[in-house]
Length: 390
Image (cartoon, rainbow, N blue to C red; front, side):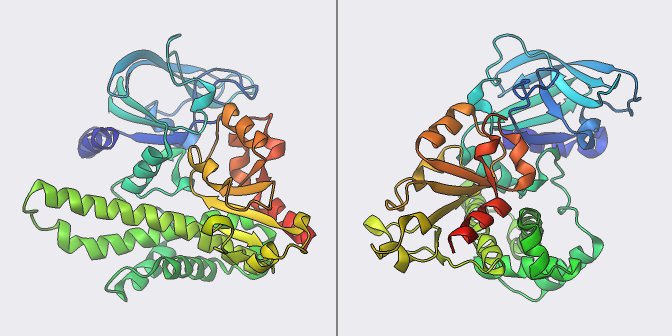
């Protein structure tokens, strides 16, 4: 439903200049981290969603609108720009006391706002990993491309040279490369365009993995446009054929996103000269994403347990984090790398109780509640931890 609504809005975008926005709900949204005002924060780059004219620093500006949430209920809400004093921020406020999406468990949900007219908007909050993954896959958005306006009519914006190189790569293939090759093509392309060396990868792995993922989304979109164009430019025989085609696209996107994350992490670990093994077999034929230093060391009862490290990798983990808890029984504290931006305090407390530690890109760490930020590792700090055991 939410995808159809945004697409309907997009069809009239050229005529009415309508806009759409998505962002992960963070611990800041309700003042949990000491922010000034309860409400959804809107970054400056998405200000045109709220106001059609530029605001003036030093002045507050507001606008009253109606928002229909989940295609179900309305709120009389307020778009406001705080420009007086030291403040310089945009928020959506006034949802009523019964508004259901300001609970702790909503941290990490995906907020979607779609403009329908000057004073009427559609709002959706996606709460499960499946819905979030489906949405990102449907619009082919990388996690780094959230927290800004959605542009579903254009390729992901990158440097002109990068776009040209992407087209050159796509033109040389007649089918999708394997997932590992796709990830490698994206890395090589980004590294070549930006002159990235192993030294730079090791000095800022948190930034590099986001840039690689973003480049791969652009590359994958180029392959989709070429390979699928022959299919969607002809009429479908029936509705079932259309559904099968759509599901095939979505499944390919979701499958690629998960595996590519593992491939990019492996490249960073190799650049950092870490000893590790992917998909080593543990108890009950489980296959952890990464074991440090190796599966052989894990099965060697003489090898010190405190020198064994486990890392799972999941693009989103709001529901799925429990899946990694029994993948390496010898290791009490487990690590999970994710691109999830924000998780509720309840789930973070559960993770701590289960001895699970999150690893996230440094830029995403502030999206989690301040109380738990010291417990969360960045990719760089995780690498330091592994090196200390090797």
